[in-house]
Length: 329
View 1 (cartoon, rainbow, N blue to C red):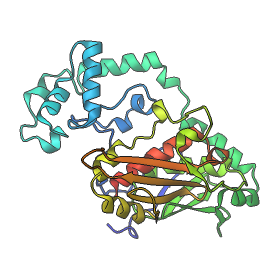
View 2: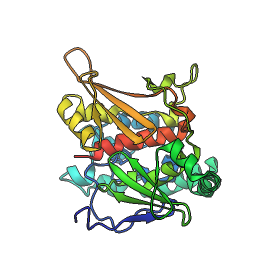
View 3: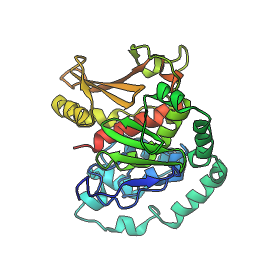
View 4: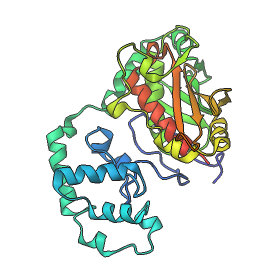
């Protein structure tokens, strides 16, 4: 299905998966475990209560096994098998699937798994936690309180003929209709999880951005607020997969960045700048691996970013952007 014939994504920012999008995402999400469970759609993972096992070839899998042995005295038999055999995803990569390891349990989707979910949800009070869907109306109301002139001056959005706004996001065009409280993707390739979450991030941006100039000085995220590194724990920026995929292929790194509307920079071994929103620029810098040092990817953000965007939303946007880069071929 071509991009032109694909149905427009239309949903009122309540985190409902886009309908009518049958094109598969070309890269496995980092939250997919070796057994095939996708942690990205698990509420425990989204709320930061539980980490993903990762693929059987990942460091995340080894870390998860160590934690399981420490806490429970043994690791998940499926993850142990996949890690020992260096199988990334059992259903895709293993000729023996389905095997007795899956049938004997206790994971995945066994009574043990379901009991664990119930126990941890109750302990975390996760059903009662207010998340983005619950706070969405508040941001629409904040946007309604702003004049169109204020919104455009602060965000870089432009007024469209329907009385709403048009906003550039990477190389995509999104329209925002405050009257119907809908955010639609008008131009741009299918983006998977990116398409599902970006509407809320757009709403926060339009509601909170200020009419102030950026500094033009891009710095490491940890330096945005002196003495306070916000981007830690569940807000950490996960560059490990970028380093694994592009650590020895700077040409592919640049090609992916430029395909999303990036601008090449003369920094590191390869670098480009992307604009998530007009006032949310991020530089991606790659140092390729050599005989002495492993590959490294760093991100740089404008010094005044937090004047326009809250750090938690920025962290979500940046990690989504990293996944978007990984999913782009």
